[in-house]
Length: 224
Length: 178
Length: 180
Image (tube, rainbow over all chains, first blue to last red; front, side, top):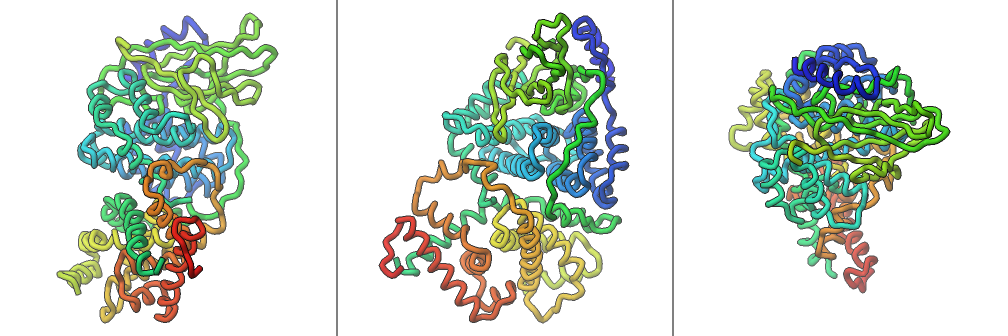
């Protein structure tokens, strides 16, 4: 319903400008149906379907990202598709929002990177989610942990994603400024556009170098 | 240094490393029980997922036909969704433009389109390609693809993120009052 | 046997998954320590631990009650982790994909940092006994049981591991090593 109303509003705006046809927004059912048709193991589908269904129902995954993600994986060797799906499955099972994970896979593929790079990136982003959540809980910036794929989606779940991405982007970009300054600046920019000020301000107040460094340490660990 | 003096250091080095990793196993009981409770045969994909992978041949055949641009607000953005049924903020048009004289095909890819190409157009043939994408408030990563070439740095972008030697551009689209 | 453990095992044998969940809860951290000692990577270790508890449950009827339960469980974990390590070795991960380790920027103490790197940079055959000794505090015989090594081998590996760490520290100039 919401999608339809907004699509109509968009038609008015866009139709007068770029003159490109609108794509219909996929439904959760289409996503799950596509999953069933994928050339991957039956056991994986059986495991993933309820988790993904719950995630789609609560907004942890959106159909507009999930369907292209599955479509993209379906063109790859099944082993690779399963490898990527297993990481997203794990993250979703723990209740994380996974659109960003799925988008990142599509992004790295679109850049023409080899599969090892796609998976390395995906695993590290996933580790960053876990680490961010742990540390933010430890510092009292967010409350309880994620509620599983079917639990209520909380505003703090978005905070965890943005923190994970800020730290990860810092490592990738290697800017001159220190980690804490980079993360602070990121959240300043997100404030008001992606994140409500009432959500971001407590984080900005509590942000310290120790906090973000701990996230980085926990996420990167002794691996590779 | 005698080995005895080294022992407490080794002990601490190990303890720190292992203990920092312990949060990883939070909730493990639930995951184990869920896996055991499934009627389906035990997933072998967990083991297969760590198998050696051959270098992929990426097929771009799923690129959206006809320059499809706009997806509905709020459901498409990689990192932007409201829980529940909150009314969505009004959409804002956003111009994506790149100078590419002589190019045959120009598109923008970004997390607002799940990295599927959205075609740009140069109707008057002056080499300036444009498309307008209606985007709600949020942070968006994107890049241009000009005749198959990745163009990651848009002068209009607020920031760049370097990924695997390439760039992506970033825009922040403000909410109400910002 | 620890408090109530026999009952939990018997209930698990009867298909009571909640009882098994309780066992997982009690041993998951120790199992994780073993897995990460072998695999060195937390995500892989977590996968291995989950697999190990699933496998242990499926093979519970083969557990010999006369053996210490934790040893048996740790053996299963070590084997699962070693298998995973073998498979991983076939597809090496790219080295410089994530160029800078941010953790390096933050550790102040050079010594602690160096020891940590030296320990975790050891080959798995030395690292695993070291972790079982210094973190799990297992007696040497049990380390041998878990890893499938003779007692003499365990002693040798432990001694050699510490010597290797010391040599690494000396090579880095962090300590003076007259012995070499």
